[in-house]
Length: 228
Image 1 (spheres, helix red, strand yellow):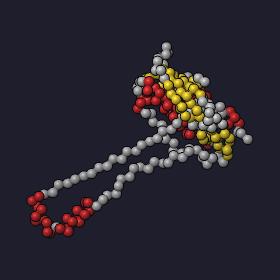
Image 2 (cartoon, one colour; image 1 turned 135 degrees about the vertical axis):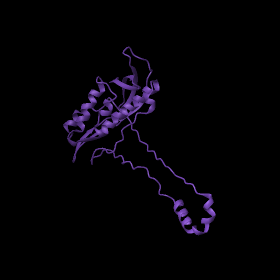
Image 3 (tube, rainbow, N blue to C red; image 1 turned 90 degrees about the vertical axis):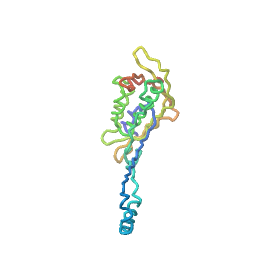
Image 4 (cartoon, rainbow, N blue to C red; image 1 turned 30 degrees about the horizontal axis):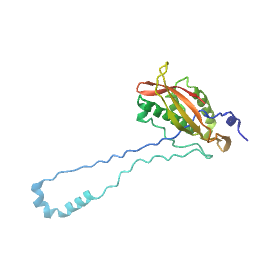
């Protein structure tokens, strides 16, 4: 039997996306010292053992420095919600005021949508979206419902099939970008209970439009609407 909360979920049949990763940097250092040439002959025989011991000690290989271990990502399942989900990092291209920059920002916006589906956190999307965002008005409350009372969801990942912008400013001072999307089915869980699945056909495609403005060196999604 399908839980009532699952019936109420219209999904983001108006959204779909992909995922990003993280990188670690390892920095290594070394040291060196000087000796006195005048004392070399006098100390050659008397300090042979200490010198050789010191040399052996100095030349002994040190243990390699290990990079910090990142907690492994774990997708959501019937056993529990997703764990250690990396927050998508906005690519440098997405910060450029250009056609390519706007299109990269659109892909990043949907990556944040996916992050919310895995974690229940809508904050990252809200930070780059306007209050009049049409799609967001549907997404935020449904996300909150899916993660209420220790509930969680799996799947729902959105894929951006294509992204296209003519990069022409509108009378309102915005730039428009069209995104063709598809979305995975969504599974809903409660501790110890399977609530049901919201099926979304793999052939279900849709087109959404982001109207964005460039401010303070970054793109901002003033509105996101479903076109078809």
